[in-house]
Each structure stands twice: as structure tokens, then as C-alpha cells.
Length: 129
Image (cartoon, rainbow, N blue to C red; front, side, top):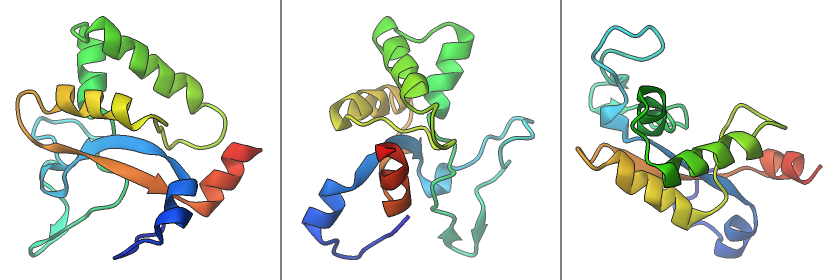
């Protein structure tokens, strides 16, 4: 993944691999006892981990497994699963408007998620194969 302070717009826009809803760095934790997640956000001082592995699609999955996910979002979750089986464990959605709907749902109780745009030349090459 490449991060630019001021990205060359054409390069990035032509190579966006997709979008993901994930936790904001300071909310990258789950206080309940689940081994897969941090009990407090990973940080050094005031610097929080802000990479891609920040509980992606967490609220969507939680409501899916509890049986409370609305039908429209069940379809979007299926789309995420179906379109990402072939090349990596990074689950992306290619449509920003659909991603925005998931973000709004995920933040309905608390503003703790954000959309991350994923740009990677390697991922873009793999997707084209």
C-alpha cells in the first residue's frame, strides 16, 4: 500500500483496488474477551496503529452473525465475500456509494469507523489476472 501526502490523482484513481470500512485508529479494539482483537487500541504514546488491519467490516459481520443485519446489507456483505475470493484475504468493495451505506450503518450507534481507500500496484495486477 502506498500513502501520498498529495497523491497524483490520475495514478491513484486509475489504480484504486477498492474500499473497506474499518475502525478509526483510536477505536481499533474490542473490550470483551475475544482473542482475535486488541483489548485496547495499539499505540505508542499518542501514535495509533493506522494500517489496513483495523477490524475491517466488523460491525457488518457482528450484525450478520447475530441475525440483525438488514436485507440490503446482507446483499452487500455477500458481494464483498463473493468478489474477494480469488486473490487475497483483503476484502474490498469496489463501489464507494455501497461502502458509504455500510459506513453509515456501522456508525449508527457511535462514530468509530471510517472508509479506507486501498491502492496497491500489486493488488491491481492480481485483480487483472
